[in-house]
Length: 119
Image (cartoon, rainbow, N blue to C red; front, side, top):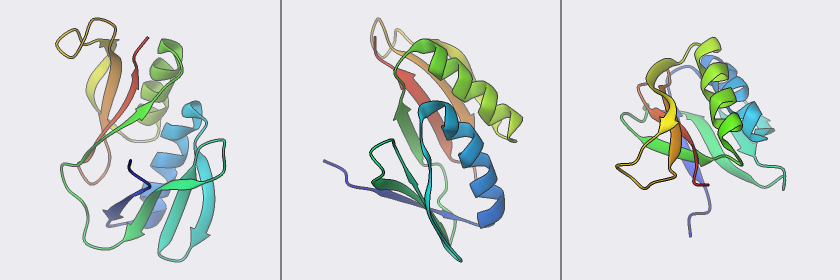
């Protein structure tokens, strides 16, 4: 079981702006805010996703689970509005399994961020 993930970023303010907006449709929000570290949590309040000022992570792929397809769509739209770069619009990905519905965006440091629904 994974407890948490930390992404290294060049510009914490820019990354925070992107992730706050992109992850909001998934119910994920900032719960810890320190000068060189920002923690995000799901509705339970437990931080599990962190951004840290350090050598940026590159080409990391992180998939966040969505409750339904509409939430995947909302994630993708919010991420693009926040400055993300499209890496795959919302849709079925039968190469993974029949009901895999995902959307992908690159963040400012080139990480592939996904929202996925398995229903």
